Image (cartoon, rainbow, N blue to C red; front, side):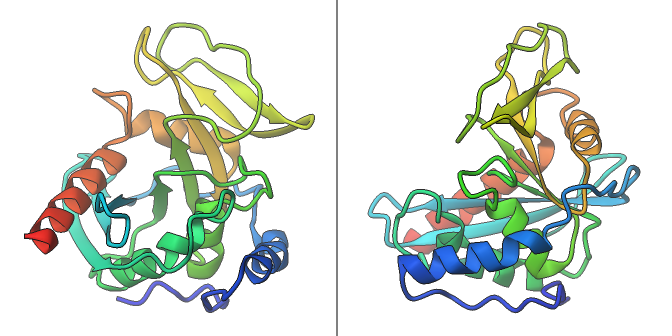
Length: 230
């Protein structure tokens, strides 16, 4: 199944300046209003694992039934980082492998949930924005830690959240997914509203702090990397 049908073909940049120019050109194409799917049938998790040497990676996509959270499809792509380690340009290291894994799926997901950021990015164009624009699919980012911004601590109960602000702009939400547990950082990527993104993350966290999409994709990419190394 080919999902890279957003109308904006991915071309690997050859320099930092070119990568920044690509971000500037694509940023206006990200739909940050949505509202996006409120009852998706399938939701995909995307994650990437790196070898200790840093010269090999495994990208994994797991597609879950949004109601049961059972994995209905998955794919991996093992290769090498496509770009150097440059703050703010991390998406360029992972995009080719993630797009390859997405193209290996047989089930087209209704929503992409990235282990990373979308709008909550120094140039307002993180991995979730880039993947959403390139694929045309609704996308959100869920991070364990913030990359930018300031926030008030949300109330300690599950479902409480506060705005994540950067430079006076709301760029995401700080969401408590478990009672008394550290929050996660949600940001819009493409074709989703922030309120809907928060609701979708809550639906994906019935038992643990991190979404089931992230947990299943993380396991798969670690397993694929271990197998490739062996």
